[in-house]
Length: 360
Image (cartoon, rainbow, N blue to C red):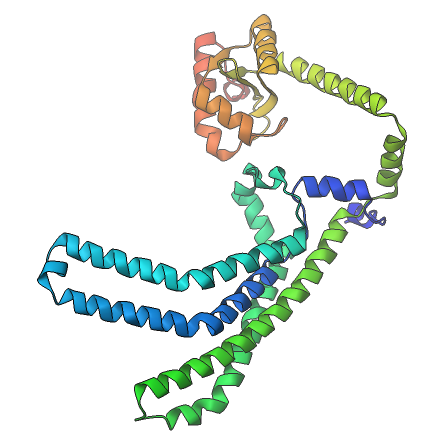
């Protein structure tokens, strides 16, 4: 709480740009859904008669053809009828589908702009963590989303009920009228309810967009120290910033290679990936103390072999650990069995006692 309270400064342009590169953009899925719904209703209002007539003609044609053995008696005849029906249905609903697609494209562009960002498409294995997922569901954001869902259902349901209840007497009096007239009346009533519900959903989407932007701005806020540090970095020349980054990377790599010396095992794939694991028995699970790809992987193997740390080649495990587990983090429960078997093999072949056995 105190860390969030210290963030009193608005986000700088660089902060906003960095967040956008990571795929962090304020947008409302409710607004997207509302606009697509309105586009679908509008296209149905325009193309509805054409769709109904086309499907009716197709159904009549199928029934007529099904009465002829030479057309529908064999499997090929039935397949031909099914293909014709499918094509007719696809052509009938194509205007509605295209309208919904265009509406979704426009509303998304209106919210996030034209810039495409591949970072937002990269898989994030942290999102698959059930513990983190439970925290999100039971945290403040989860309660807010639940409240939003309740409000949406309540408002849309209330509007639909208000539009339907006054017409109940009218519907009851339609008993015995011709089916086409009854169908037209039901279609008109349904369209009115749908349009009112869509208008309410659009209003909810607009409010949700304002809320998402407010929340996004709050998340991007910075402390005074963050603003000062960013300002100092901007004053440095690009060459000096690049030199500082290289030095920081070298120091980080040096610390990582030093950690390899105390690892219990290095899992390799044989030259592309390498992950060093350490387990002292004090933490619940082994920790990734070093990991690297290509040249860094070769360096990790070289340091491990020079220090006598076992190197085990396991392609699937090495790649999975490299992708899923951050540096200096404990391995997830999904890897417990595979890593436990690996460590048991290492302790057995190297005649080393495990930390658990040593503690016992």
